[in-house]
Amino acid sequence: MLTTERKALILDTLAKTGRVVAKEFSEKLSLSEDTIRRDLRELATEGLLQRVHGGALPASKALADLPTRRQVSPDDKAAIAKAAAAMVKNGQIIFLDGGTSAVAVARALPSDLRATVVTHSPDVVVALLSHPGVEVELVGGRIYKHSNVAVGAVAMEAISSIRADIYFMGVTGVHGEHGLTTGDREEAAIKRLISRQCGETIVLGSREKLGAVSAYNVVAADQVDGIIVERSSPRDLIHKLKQAGMIITWVSS
Image (cartoon, rainbow, N blue to C red):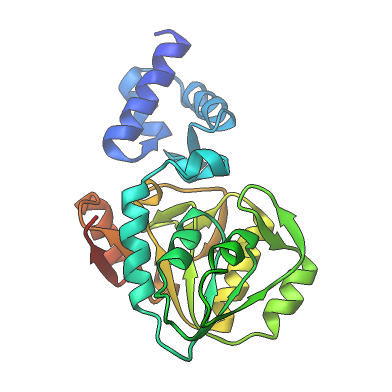
Protein backbone atom coordinates (compact mmCIF):
# COMPACT_ATOMS: atom_id res chain seq x y z
CA MET A 1 0.00 0.00 0.00
CA LEU A 2 1.34 3.43 -0.96
CA THR A 3 2.03 6.05 1.68
CA THR A 4 -0.71 8.32 0.32
CA GLU A 5 -3.19 5.45 0.48
CA ARG A 6 -2.25 4.66 4.10
CA LYS A 7 -2.63 8.27 5.11
CA ALA A 8 -5.99 8.54 3.39
CA LEU A 9 -7.12 5.41 5.22
CA ILE A 10 -5.91 6.82 8.54
CA LEU A 11 -7.87 10.04 8.02
CA ASP A 12 -10.94 8.11 6.90
CA THR A 13 -10.76 5.94 10.03
CA LEU A 14 -10.43 9.02 12.22
CA ALA A 15 -13.47 10.58 10.59
CA LYS A 16 -15.55 7.42 11.11
CA THR A 17 -14.40 6.23 14.55
CA GLY A 18 -12.81 9.28 16.18
CA ARG A 19 -9.47 7.60 16.92
CA VAL A 20 -6.64 5.52 15.48
CA VAL A 21 -4.63 3.10 17.63
CA ALA A 22 -1.22 2.59 16.01
CA LYS A 23 -0.75 -1.04 17.08
CA GLU A 24 -4.22 -2.13 15.97
CA PHE A 25 -3.93 -0.25 12.69
CA SER A 26 -0.52 -1.75 11.89
CA GLU A 27 -1.84 -5.27 12.54
CA LYS A 28 -4.87 -4.61 10.35
CA LEU A 29 -2.63 -3.60 7.44
CA SER A 30 0.12 -6.15 8.20
CA LEU A 31 2.66 -3.35 8.48
CA SER A 32 5.16 -2.39 11.16
CA GLU A 33 3.96 -0.13 13.96
CA ASP A 34 6.88 2.20 13.20
CA THR A 35 5.49 2.74 9.69
CA ILE A 36 2.10 3.78 11.03
CA ARG A 37 3.67 6.01 13.68
CA ARG A 38 5.70 7.75 10.98
CA ASP A 39 2.52 8.35 8.99
CA LEU A 40 0.86 9.76 12.11
CA ARG A 41 3.80 12.09 12.76
CA GLU A 42 3.69 13.43 9.21
CA LEU A 43 -0.08 13.93 9.28
CA ALA A 44 0.24 15.71 12.64
CA THR A 45 2.87 18.04 11.16
CA GLU A 46 0.36 18.90 8.44
CA GLY A 47 -2.23 19.69 11.11
CA LEU A 48 -4.54 16.88 10.00
CA LEU A 49 -4.62 14.99 13.30
CA GLN A 50 -3.43 15.22 16.90
CA ARG A 51 -1.04 12.54 18.13
CA VAL A 52 -1.71 11.04 21.55
CA HIS A 53 -0.13 8.14 23.43
CA GLY A 54 -0.59 5.03 21.31
CA GLY A 55 -2.18 6.66 18.30
CA ALA A 56 -4.08 9.74 17.16
CA LEU A 57 -7.30 11.72 17.55
CA PRO A 58 -8.96 14.25 15.22
CA ALA A 59 -7.30 17.67 15.08
CA SER A 60 -9.56 20.59 15.86
CA LYS A 61 -10.87 22.74 13.03
CA ALA A 62 -10.88 25.54 15.60
CA LEU A 63 -7.09 25.82 15.15
CA ALA A 64 -7.58 27.62 11.84
CA ASP A 65 -6.94 31.37 11.58
CA LEU A 66 -9.56 33.84 12.80
CA PRO A 67 -11.08 34.70 9.38
CA THR A 68 -11.55 30.97 8.67
CA ARG A 69 -12.98 30.25 12.13
CA ARG A 70 -15.57 32.97 11.71
CA GLN A 71 -17.09 30.81 8.95
CA VAL A 72 -17.13 27.58 11.01
CA SER A 73 -20.41 26.51 12.73
CA PRO A 74 -21.95 30.02 12.74
CA ASP A 75 -25.45 28.74 13.57
CA ASP A 76 -24.12 26.58 16.43
CA LYS A 77 -22.17 29.50 17.84
CA ALA A 78 -25.15 31.86 17.64
CA ALA A 79 -27.42 29.41 19.49
CA ILE A 80 -24.76 28.65 22.11
CA ALA A 81 -24.10 32.37 22.58
CA LYS A 82 -27.79 33.07 23.14
CA ALA A 83 -27.96 30.37 25.83
CA ALA A 84 -24.79 31.67 27.49
CA ALA A 85 -26.08 35.24 27.49
CA ALA A 86 -29.28 34.07 29.18
CA MET A 87 -27.19 32.77 32.11
CA VAL A 88 -25.89 36.27 32.91
CA LYS A 89 -27.66 38.24 35.64
CA ASN A 90 -27.65 41.94 36.45
CA GLY A 91 -24.87 42.92 38.82
CA GLN A 92 -22.58 40.02 37.97
CA ILE A 93 -18.93 40.14 36.96
CA ILE A 94 -18.43 38.04 33.84
CA PHE A 95 -15.17 36.89 32.29
CA LEU A 96 -15.40 36.42 28.53
CA ASP A 97 -12.66 34.48 26.77
CA GLY A 98 -11.30 35.29 23.33
CA GLY A 99 -12.20 33.77 19.98
CA THR A 100 -15.27 33.69 17.79
CA SER A 101 -17.59 31.99 20.31
CA ALA A 102 -16.85 34.59 22.99
CA VAL A 103 -17.48 37.45 20.57
CA ALA A 104 -20.84 35.84 19.74
CA VAL A 105 -21.71 35.79 23.47
CA ALA A 106 -20.80 39.48 23.80
CA ARG A 107 -23.08 40.36 20.91
CA ALA A 108 -25.90 38.26 22.38
CA LEU A 109 -25.94 39.99 25.78
CA PRO A 110 -29.20 41.92 26.34
CA SER A 111 -28.97 45.62 25.55
CA ASP A 112 -30.42 46.50 28.99
CA LEU A 113 -28.00 44.29 30.95
CA ARG A 114 -26.20 45.99 33.82
CA ALA A 115 -23.06 43.99 34.56
CA THR A 116 -19.27 44.06 34.34
CA VAL A 117 -17.45 42.09 31.64
CA VAL A 118 -13.75 41.37 32.05
CA THR A 119 -11.90 40.10 28.98
CA HIS A 120 -8.41 39.75 27.53
CA SER A 121 -9.84 40.04 24.00
CA PRO A 122 -9.93 43.38 22.13
CA ASP A 123 -12.55 41.83 19.80
CA VAL A 124 -14.90 41.28 22.75
CA VAL A 125 -14.39 44.88 23.86
CA VAL A 126 -15.40 46.16 20.41
CA ALA A 127 -18.49 43.92 20.43
CA LEU A 128 -19.58 45.43 23.77
CA LEU A 129 -19.27 49.11 22.81
CA SER A 130 -22.99 49.26 22.02
CA HIS A 131 -24.03 47.92 25.45
CA PRO A 132 -24.54 51.08 27.56
CA GLY A 133 -25.10 49.23 30.86
CA VAL A 134 -22.06 46.96 30.60
CA GLU A 135 -18.81 48.09 32.20
CA VAL A 136 -15.84 46.61 30.34
CA GLU A 137 -12.41 45.86 31.79
CA LEU A 138 -9.69 44.90 29.32
CA VAL A 139 -6.78 42.79 30.53
CA GLY A 140 -3.55 43.76 28.78
CA GLY A 141 -0.43 41.83 27.81
CA ARG A 142 1.28 40.33 24.79
CA ILE A 143 -1.23 39.56 22.03
CA TYR A 144 -1.50 35.95 20.87
CA LYS A 145 -2.65 36.66 17.33
CA HIS A 146 -4.34 33.32 16.61
CA SER A 147 -7.15 34.23 19.01
CA ASN A 148 -6.36 37.96 19.40
CA VAL A 149 -6.07 37.70 23.19
CA ALA A 150 -3.58 38.96 25.76
CA VAL A 151 -1.27 36.34 27.28
CA GLY A 152 1.97 36.32 29.28
CA ALA A 153 3.07 37.50 32.70
CA VAL A 154 1.36 40.91 32.55
CA ALA A 155 -2.00 39.33 31.71
CA MET A 156 -1.61 36.67 34.41
CA GLU A 157 -0.81 39.27 37.08
CA ALA A 158 -3.93 41.25 36.21
CA ILE A 159 -6.18 38.17 36.10
CA SER A 160 -4.87 37.03 39.51
CA SER A 161 -6.45 40.10 41.11
CA ILE A 162 -9.92 39.50 39.64
CA ARG A 163 -12.78 37.45 41.10
CA ALA A 164 -15.62 36.90 38.63
CA ASP A 165 -18.97 35.13 38.96
CA ILE A 166 -18.89 33.17 35.72
CA TYR A 167 -16.34 32.44 32.99
CA PHE A 168 -17.38 31.52 29.46
CA MET A 169 -14.43 29.47 28.22
CA GLY A 170 -13.51 28.96 24.60
CA VAL A 171 -11.25 26.04 23.64
CA THR A 172 -10.23 24.28 20.45
CA GLY A 173 -10.77 20.72 21.71
CA VAL A 174 -13.39 19.08 23.95
CA HIS A 175 -12.79 15.40 24.65
CA GLY A 176 -14.10 13.10 27.36
CA GLU A 177 -10.75 11.44 28.01
CA HIS A 178 -8.31 14.25 27.17
CA GLY A 179 -10.39 17.10 28.56
CA LEU A 180 -10.30 20.68 27.33
CA THR A 181 -7.38 21.65 25.12
CA THR A 182 -6.03 24.50 23.05
CA GLY A 183 -3.21 25.05 20.58
CA ASP A 184 -0.89 27.35 22.58
CA ARG A 185 0.84 26.72 25.92
CA GLU A 186 0.53 30.29 27.21
CA GLU A 187 -3.10 30.55 26.21
CA ALA A 188 -3.82 27.28 28.03
CA ALA A 189 -2.18 28.67 31.19
CA ILE A 190 -4.27 31.85 30.96
CA LYS A 191 -7.49 29.84 30.62
CA ARG A 192 -6.60 27.69 33.65
CA LEU A 193 -5.96 30.79 35.73
CA ILE A 194 -9.20 32.48 34.67
CA SER A 195 -11.14 29.34 35.58
CA ARG A 196 -9.56 29.29 39.05
CA GLN A 197 -10.51 32.94 39.57
CA CYS A 198 -14.18 32.45 38.65
CA GLY A 199 -17.02 30.97 40.64
CA GLU A 200 -18.33 29.01 37.67
CA THR A 201 -16.81 27.93 34.33
CA ILE A 202 -19.03 27.20 31.33
CA VAL A 203 -17.50 25.86 28.09
CA LEU A 204 -18.76 27.10 24.72
CA GLY A 205 -18.89 23.79 22.83
CA SER A 206 -19.57 24.38 19.15
CA ARG A 207 -19.64 21.22 17.08
CA GLU A 208 -16.19 21.40 15.45
CA LYS A 209 -14.53 21.20 18.90
CA LEU A 210 -16.31 18.07 20.13
CA GLY A 211 -14.19 14.92 20.07
CA ALA A 212 -11.15 16.91 18.92
CA VAL A 213 -7.86 17.36 20.78
CA SER A 214 -5.21 20.08 20.61
CA ALA A 215 -1.66 20.08 21.89
CA TYR A 216 -2.01 21.77 25.28
CA ASN A 217 -4.27 20.78 28.15
CA VAL A 218 -6.35 23.44 29.89
CA VAL A 219 -8.31 21.45 32.49
CA ALA A 220 -9.92 18.03 32.77
CA ALA A 221 -13.55 17.63 31.73
CA ASP A 222 -14.72 17.26 35.32
CA GLN A 223 -13.08 20.54 36.39
CA VAL A 224 -15.63 22.78 34.70
CA ASP A 225 -19.23 23.39 35.70
CA GLY A 226 -20.86 22.69 32.36
CA ILE A 227 -20.80 22.90 28.58
CA ILE A 228 -23.30 24.34 26.12
CA VAL A 229 -23.73 22.25 22.96
CA GLU A 230 -26.01 22.25 19.95
CA ARG A 231 -28.76 19.60 20.11
CA SER A 232 -27.73 17.92 16.85
CA SER A 233 -24.17 17.25 18.11
CA PRO A 234 -23.09 13.58 17.82
CA ARG A 235 -24.64 11.64 20.69
CA ASP A 236 -21.65 9.35 21.16
CA LEU A 237 -19.37 12.33 21.78
CA ILE A 238 -21.83 13.90 24.21
CA HIS A 239 -22.20 10.57 26.04
CA LYS A 240 -18.44 10.47 26.58
CA LEU A 241 -18.52 13.98 27.99
CA LYS A 242 -21.28 12.99 30.40
CA GLN A 243 -19.26 9.96 31.47
CA ALA A 244 -16.35 12.31 32.16
CA GLY A 245 -18.53 14.33 34.53
CA MET A 246 -19.61 17.27 32.37
CA ILE A 247 -23.08 18.79 32.79
CA ILE A 248 -24.65 19.34 29.37
CA THR A 249 -26.85 22.27 28.36
CA TRP A 250 -28.61 21.60 25.05
CA VAL A 251 -29.57 24.35 22.60
CA SER A 252 -31.13 24.31 19.14
CA SER A 253 -29.86 26.43 16.27
